[in-house]
Amino acid sequence: MAKKILSVLSHTEYGNLEDSDIGLFASAFAPVAGSQVTILLSDDAVNYGVRGQEGTGIEIAGGKVQPGFLIETDIRSVQQANIPVYAFSEDLDERGIAAGELVEGIKTISRKEFGRFIDQFDTVWNW
Image 1 (cartoon, rainbow, N blue to C red):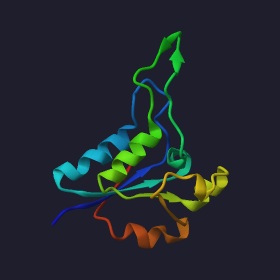
Image 2: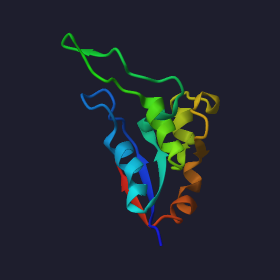
Image 3: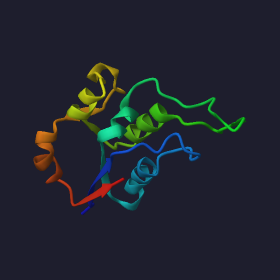
Image 4: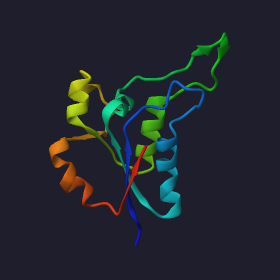
């Protein structure tokens, strides 16, 4: 039986010299190993869910960061790989992010639902 994994992203990795978030990257490849993964965006990582984000054209010390950060593309890619993406509604509210601003397909849950939600997983990864 496939192991069910909840991958919780709580802080953002974009903005450093890496071209993707290691937690998001690892989550995308877990199904290859036969695991079922669900991603939960919490705290500052709920910003990943906002439509229209990309980080191309960033320069550090006069040099362009290539290929740039394609945040929305990464979120859509994991969804296309049948990895559900959730976000805490309270964290979205705290940052002034409306549900209508999210990438299509991201589901919201309340922190009050977290106990019941987490019970369906065998393992929890925290990034």
